Image 1 (cartoon, rainbow, N blue to C red):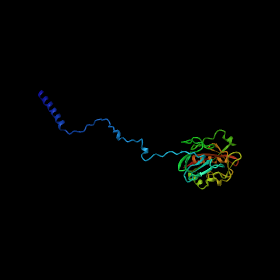
Image 2 (cartoon, helix red, strand yellow):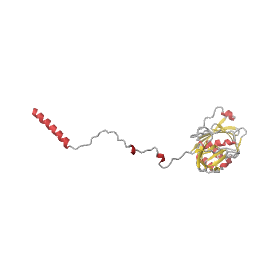
Image 3 (cartoon, rainbow, N blue to C red):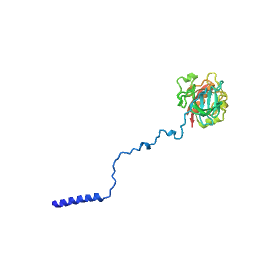
Image 4 (tube, rainbow, N blue to C red):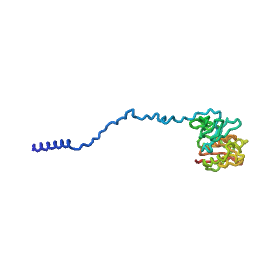
Amino acid sequence: MLDIVLVVALAWACAGLFWQLFAPHSPQVRLMPAVEAPRSAQMQWAGARTWFGSGTQDAGESALSAQLIAVIAGGDSYSAAIFTGLDASSPTAVRVGQDLRPGVRLARVERDHVELDEHGQTSKLMLQGASAPAAATPPAGGPAVGAAPPPPPAGQAGAIGGAISEGPSSTLTRGQLAAAMQSANISDWAKGITSAAGGGIQIDNPSQQPFAGPLGLQSGDVLKSINGANLTQNTDISSVYTAFSQQSQVQLVLLRHGSLLRMHYQIQP
């Protein structure tokens, strides 16, 4: 019996040795640490911005002795800006491509600033009351740039002079406003209006006001406030332009036939 066990054990050992020697070998899977690429072969991305020349530099602040009080931002075909300080007598409206002064051209109009071409150099002039890089403070007497209309402040009705009735809601598109600006003479932006005796902007001739038609304004209307900001004189029409060119919702309070009316406008792209 012992001889049989020894023979079986020897046969098993021989079979194992034969398999180790002549069986096909398969690659063994072993976990190896990742091989780090040589530092000299690693791509240096830090200087990528300079591979194709220096990056575009931000426009510097303009030294122009003028203030930007309103913008009509949109396509370059009708964008414009209204400045004070160019003409001592009154604010001046300028379209994109026109000169503010010899050698100073209005190159681009944005929501809170304009870009100027000053003798071949690009400069930036911020909207009055706005601060770079984003406008957070409204221009004097004007609405906050890009902000939704705030709720009417407490006591506003009394301050304006009576109860305010809710008027109709209208929906306008940027295209309608653009068409109104294209058909108008931008230099006449403040024509057809006067400062109302009791404060506000009185519409004397709607045909001379680019936005009067789309907004449904009538002769004799007195604009009292826009998005909660009081309108006191005819030059405040710049605040009206700014609100309708930048915001998606506008509330305009006006005096019509002796009664105060709040008009609601939804501005779509």
